Length: 364
Image 1: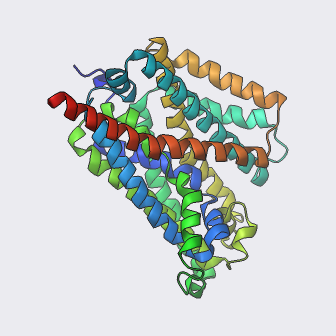
Image 2 (image 1 turned 180 degrees about the vertical axis):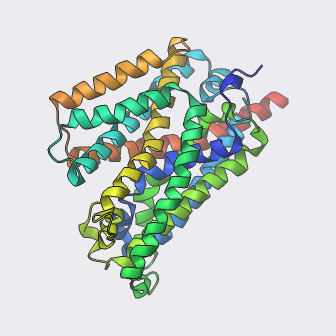
């Protein structure tokens, strides 16, 4: 019996849900982070991170094949018992919830710094919370359709970078390769691997997929799309800005568009930020949904709309009394990166080894 059959997603929605969860958080500042660690060789780190993420993603799919009609929580209950599954549900709910909130706060700070500097934090977050509530309440199928739509908006937005390059470009910035050897590239890879986080949501998304035999190819495609987008924006920024200049901007992908100017839009980067909100919302919405999914599973309730409303209201109330800063959010992002490395890479490897050994012992 399929427990999640009433809310299944198509193969394309599955791809774009994972891709959207990955690409949103890193699209604005990833070029700067790579340039700080490895200079203009930082783009090589993206390919390394892609390969690592694909391996971890395929491990997740192999694990979930042991429980095709259940999520990670049902699989954990099957192998370790319900108490262990409940502990895992608390950890995942807290980790995913904190990730969603942190990404929303950082987006709010970016919007305030560029467009609405005098608008109170809680007002901006209220504007974020209304569409978030409507989309997340609709369930994973609605989120899949939304991610599918936003992907095509992303393609259209990326075309503007070609126009920016026509104004200024210097391809010699990329040469020579490996200016300081492999060490900076590997260091950049280690510090930015969290930019590919999002594939771990396949632990929860897998039972919703209609054609589970295509899960492996779908998650590889999602990771590859993310790699292509990251390579595109990173190489564009490296060619446009000088190696020293790019590290001076918090969001170089936004600053790059300042050179574009049309009669109907003097500041095109403001228009980009409007599209940026759509793109990054495909990251915080799924994380928030899966956090509520774990809480609902823990409490044995199917309706999570009230919990969603309460969570968003508490979040808005928090920003009413306390104003976060960029430095604090950067610290939160480091904590999320540590959680992502453990849950996205170390945990699947250990779990895969365990289930393989246990299944083989049972067959004897």
